[in-house]
Length: 460
Ligand SMILES: Cc1cc2nc3c(=O)[nH]c(=O)nc-3n(C[C@H](O)[C@H](O)[C@H](O)COP(=O)(O)OP(=O)(O)OC[C@H]3O[C@@H](n4cnc5c(N)ncnc54)[C@H](O)[C@@H]3O)c2cc1C
Image (cartoon, rainbow, N blue to C red; front, side, top):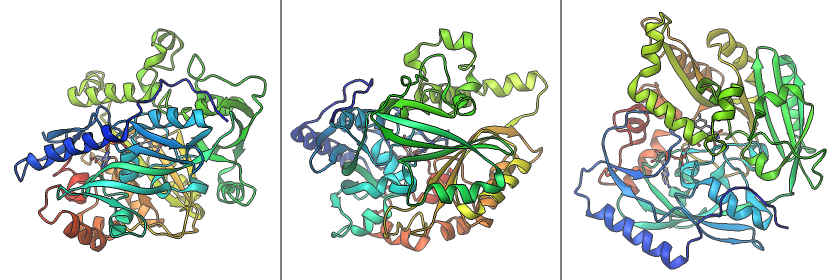
């Protein structure tokens, strides 16, 4: 069954062209003098650590396509720097989608596997790396190896997730795909804070729908959104790429229908709700803002420019307003501790809305650099905003989040700022396993280590 989307046709890459692109990247990498700081020369990024030091950019432009989709085996063979937007555009015509599609269109498959990713299928299908069958990696030492769950490089296969490109770069991946229906029926259910744990556990049980996520609008006002594949468009599928804004509809409607394409990208158009800060939800600005620029990567570029110039900070200063601390994080909390986390978060930090997404590892396998227990249900809480700075302590809110996550037995993603001290960091992210991988795949220290990369001194 083919399902139409509205994304542009993806780049299809012949195997010979892929081999040539890999050979060229390897040539570039090996030609660099030892000690040269390198970074992937990708057109987009979803990292929220700004101010990376200058580095030699590796040209990855030949590694951005889909090599093939096998509708019978339900797999796709994909180059490492391919965006999910292109990947989904290649699979939907076959009635298939990746098992977990992170919400932002320009997140790449390699970025999501090395930097983790999550979406509303994660309560059943885990994280993007759990549907990888094999991957070719250019290791830090300059070799191209194929890592599989049980082969000679099974250690790298298991340790690649959450290594953030410090062990090597994914060049080609074979991933499992999921069959889809043309539409998704959504049901938005209000849930009281005290019932959240029980309700989430219940809906993630044996009769679970196809998709589950949630939105917290304010203390005590939250909704779980349950999505089910259907052939029925309902009264006509909704369109949130125009005047309407998806997250607002959650409060206003009980039932909704979207095409599967629009469901997958429902959060990208307004970067969840973050486009609000740029005025894009104001009806006048929205009508003037070209539709093709209502995308998360456009907003991120604007925010990056603002961070570089410090413009909004200066305006706030002139207006006599206090400085703001950006609080942009995704954390995983065991479901039974979720209400405690939210209570403390509302009291101490006070940002809303928040995004909730239940997740459970897909299989029994463990992933050493991001230790989660198999069979345990966690809830990802995402918050992407700012709070008034605590005088004299510019990182106070982010540090409080780290403390809370630790106290409640959770974990924190590493795509944004990290304030742990080195010892605590390695306790949380399995220092011994990481060191063993670094010794095997980066014996000459060509790439920065994970701690220095995510905390600042070796950013890339
Ligand atoms: C506001 C916000 C919301 C987010 N929301 C979500 C969300 O809802 N769901 C979700 O899943 N994720 C989310 N993320 C996190 C995002 O998935 C990760 O940051 C991911 O790593 C980004 O992938 P990218 O392809 O854009 O990588 P980049 O931003 O280009 O790079 C991220 C890191 O991965 C490394 N890397 C990139 N490509 C490769 C590769 N091929 N091989 C090895 N290393 C590589 C880079 O060296 C870099 O260290 C969010 C991030 C932000 C800022």
